[in-house]
Image 1 (cartoon, helix red, strand yellow):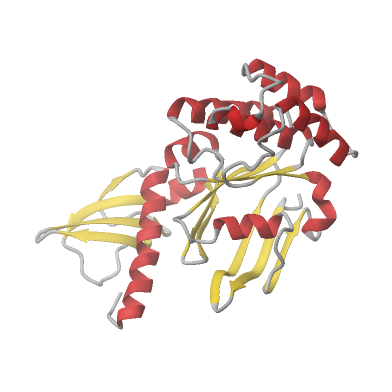
Image 2: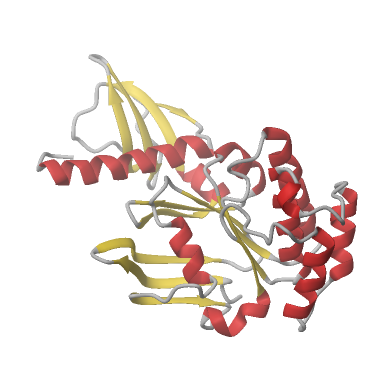
Amino acid sequence: MEPAVETRALGKRYGRTWALRDCALEVPAGRIAALVGPNGAGKTTLLHLAVGLLKPDEGEVRVFGREPRSVLPDIGFVAQDTPLYRDFTAAELITMGGKLNRRRWDAALARERLAMLGIPPDKPVGKLSGGQRAQVALALALAKRPRLLLLDEPIASLDPLARREFMQTLMGAVAESETTVVLSSHLLADLERSCDSLIVLQQSRVQLAGAVDELLESHRTLTGPRAGSEAIAGVAKVVRASHTERQSTLLVRRGDGPIDPLWTEHEVTLEDVVLAYLADADTRVGAAAWGVPA
């Protein structure tokens, strides 16, 4: 099946600074992909390239095999901070959405979802809570019946209850359709419960990408004797290491064959894996800047 989003050597530069560089990834159709990384890692730039708001300086991005602007009717997008016309009511925004999206606009779907959430149709959205505004933005995006839904930090500023309601609405909508979702967020706990693919961005580059189940299966935390630079049987890569005088704790990517029995294996969480790769990228960049070994 053709990927929903595919990038090849993708790069975007602002002046002399690369916001995204040499980005190569695939998001399979039908997946819910988490896009994670710190501020400035390139997450918003990647989403803006995928929705056609920016043009690449290097490489290319394809949505369902085509240039993003040619498939805009198939893309739903909720930008960071959920920008809406604050003087408009939710009902007026739904009406406006129908005038701007004549190909397929499901106004009834938007009204039903907002009614279930108790959001008033006649109150200016600028006077709604942050969680309610986020739900209005999501309902408008879903009313397009998109094949691809891009969400840029839609829950970052919400309280825990509003985050849960937003994610429940999102998951319910995706379960009823074949929509592919790319969700940018810092909140790893929420992502682990809802996403089946992962993309880790750091220092403007992709550090890790793949199916969540496969990534968790291929990584382990090991504890054992104080490690030096020697290879460990069954380990393809040491991602992150910490040491005491007698013991080392390593987060590793497994290789072929069993791991050396001198080491004790522990399963990892998504948070363990993400934080290890982010820290590893920071260490390498810092070491290069200071001219010291990583």
